[in-house]
Length: 543
Image (cartoon, rainbow, N blue to C red):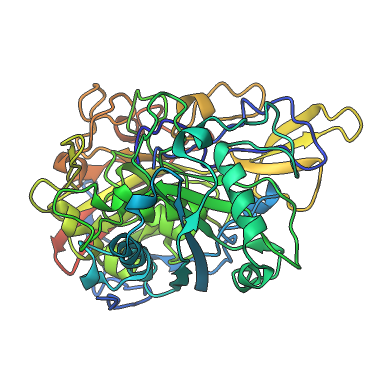
């Protein structure tokens, strides 16, 4: 959920053999909070049927332009888990058939709420068919958003009755240092996971360690208590993803990446109830379990991604950057003049990547272009008032018209290196490689959509955003510029037929400069051609 009480997702922990002095600087994000699949297709190169000619004003000579300078990416992308592995943590694999263990937790003062109806509801919210919910379950959503490349299975265990009351749980001590191993508790929920782990049999945890790494692949706790049950800034009764700081155990796998949210989130949205539950929050938190960050700004000053996304304000489909990061699709990569027909992104996975010298994977800086339509997983939250919460009466409505979304992506990697003896930071630099298995180095994405958490090497004073929705109006004022305002993007953010971004006009859209953050020119113009429900023509010319 946006604007959480506690910020935990993506937190950079100390490596097992390191005592990182820069922990505060490295804190990452947290979050507040029919099973039929769409038609699945792989983007195909669709060359222009005719080569357009351009009249030379000087000589009036017809000049043929090659418009087939693009290709489907063939390079192997990183696994979605690699960044977590670099910090000695794990994430849920985003491909194939994966399993989630869901534990409904009852406190001593909430036992009266642990009804059969609520248990059935939790099953529907996580593993039900679409028609059993008010929209989608976690499983049905991820099967659709991944174009059938991910199938989530699992079970909701019988109620687990904790020894603590809600107030006693909230008062549990948390370790002041971020040590790794038994006896250290980074969060009150760590006490609870330990209680569950010590109670349940090893056979159960082995079943949910499909890759055999000694960690449960995905561990969910749904607490049977009110959202913000205790009140106050440090109330643990919110929704977030975090890590349990216990070593792997192949004989009795330990939970590592886990999510935590109230059963009441299933009744949070207008039009939803326990019979047709609301899974928006559970879907969002599960996105964190795959390694996706929040795209809103924790500093509450801007909305870089425009808010209308599952990993932003918990609505609609994932954008194509997220899907590329999870290996559900590959881009058309532009290498020169190109006319590309983009089909709707939500149903086909089509998108364009523009960057000369691109490093071959998702962790780079580039322009990303996709064709948005209010269909499929976008449809529900684009109708009426969109997704509206009962508690706050705040509605978030996804775009209800077709249009082209252009994103400035800067997901470049940074590696930190520490001295093996002093454990002091010795170097931090941009890189194209993820460090895994080195106890004195780790890799993270440098840019963040939260200003205070965006990292760059020493001497680079830029504050780079991870994912910026470029507004089609090309404004430099606060209005319509998501880098300068916390407002939600409107339909004017979408590029329409006839809109043109000149090769030397990117400053109005990137906003921070006329070039990429790395100093190189974009070097292409982009024009939006004819558009209908089946697709849009994108006309790209090299400067």
